Every structure is written in structure tokens, then in C-alpha cells.
Image 1: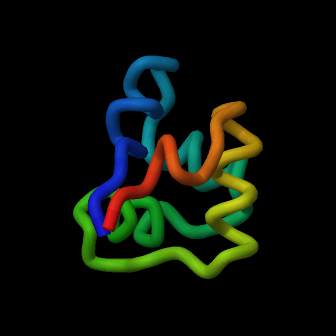
Image 2: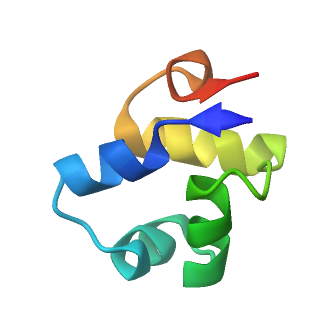
Length: 62
């Protein structure tokens, strides 16, 4: 699944570690999300969308 997480994160000046802390996941999870190697669970997708104040559809694409 394609996503804009890396761009959203860097636009805010956050490291992967910063984002991981905000989402309560590991830095490796953030890396896997950004590289498209891991599709988030629905609860995690909602946390990501809430954090960036966007709809899930604005972040993730099939």
C-alpha cells in the first residue's frame, strides 16, 4: 500500500524515532510503513490519520 507518511513526517521535521514515539510503535515499524513493507492495522491507521489531522484516504492509497 502506498502512503505519504515519509513526506508528512519530514514536512514536520520529525525523525522516524519522533514519529514512532508519537504513535507508540517502534522506529522499525515506522520504517516499514514508509517503505511500504508493512500495512498498518486499522487502529494504527486511525492513529496516524489523527496525528496528521487528515483522513485515512488522504494518507494511504491501494
